[in-house]
Length: 617
Image 1 (spheres, rainbow, N blue to C red):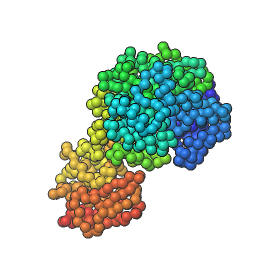
Image 2: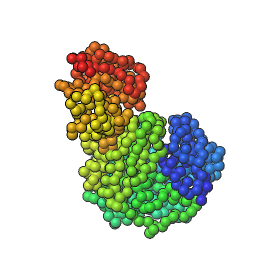
Image 3: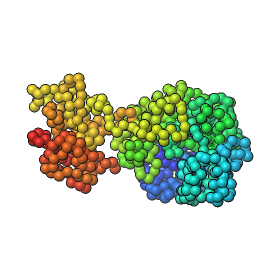
């Protein structure tokens, strides 16, 4: 067995590899950039080596620095994880040439599967079913257009060196082909330096099915069954599950056997994934499932396979790289239960899924079945890397149990102040089509707004948070003879908000907590800085507008003495790289204005004071 291992990656996958290596008694070495100096994977490893500035092209993508770090620390092997250099055949060969064990497939296998057209031809020769299309060397627009006409529309143009949806265009009609081809080729050159494309028949009701394969240096190849990755957004996987819904035993046997043939065709060693496109318009059928491509590495979604098979795929990788045979034969492997995985990102679905960058001041994923993460509370989400916070995995005896468990976990997450896609994931998991396993890769694009999380907490959630902030039955001497309060003013994500409650309780004037987080269906808001209201036409809420958190004033929309209307924008505060709009809680007059554009303010600073026309705050 390998005794020391350098992990040429970062974040979640680096921590995942370290976990298995530690269990096997293997010494681990991490590499890190400037931005990752205090990262979790650096602290978990036995040793760590700095490899350069924060941009990946100056650190994690520089093979020479990684090999130098391995030599410096005496690492016996290098594990590339996924992404970065994991499918770079030149880097794999350089590792081997340096006398270091490469935890991955042979460079020749990576090369063979690296170009989609060559891989497709190879699969056809191996008897693996492939999508009807064109793979020719003649790349003239005239020939490509003629081939597309012959295939029949809609057709798919794909860059042969592509990935992640780049260099890919669907063409619905002949008159659209020329423009789509030119656009696809421009993007292919920009992203991959290769304008070569292939054509495929567009599958009307596509499902993304992939099979986990594993080979060793003794000629053994097995599969560990299939995963369904059909729920996608812009060609990026959102929710993965294993096994695939609706997969009968005969179809499973056929697709998994085809995957094994594909792996054997390139003398595959280590973990790999054969990806198929299925036409699900008439259920899953062996004659309607076609090879797409092979990923010559460990996949992001490998945990769902681990959970249904009871196998540790990283351990398999390390044993195979050490020259051992596969830990299990095909007849030893079986499926138990159902597993689902979601990718939790620091991004805001309500703002076009823009990344949310900053500090994870609160990071609570509750009672999740399994969490694979590379961050912890207090960590920073950097602008330099993918904003994935964690992979959240659930297992159940059946699909519904796994789905419900995963949805409940995400609904109860509490992450602040960064925005996440948890609310979006909850909506997707609970969508009727997903619940019923009516899956295809276009589901998210079709549903659009129906999957967007709520922009504001419910009245019930606001009332519950108010009770947490203002404990009931506290005496407030100056109001001893006043009627019981049934509303108060709060700041919720910087917005002055009057919250009403029922039940007759008189909530106290003293604040029980400095602030509370409202977590509802995966969305999180921060409530703080309440002021008691006291009745009257508009509830006469306290007009003191305080800064809800430390930040910088980026815009002031009112002036001293100005008359404002309820809900009118007063100013904008930038905090944690997010903008928060503070608004007027009622109609009134600005009697005090302390906000100055560009000024830094601390939490609780009085920014604006508003009184009603009668002079009441």
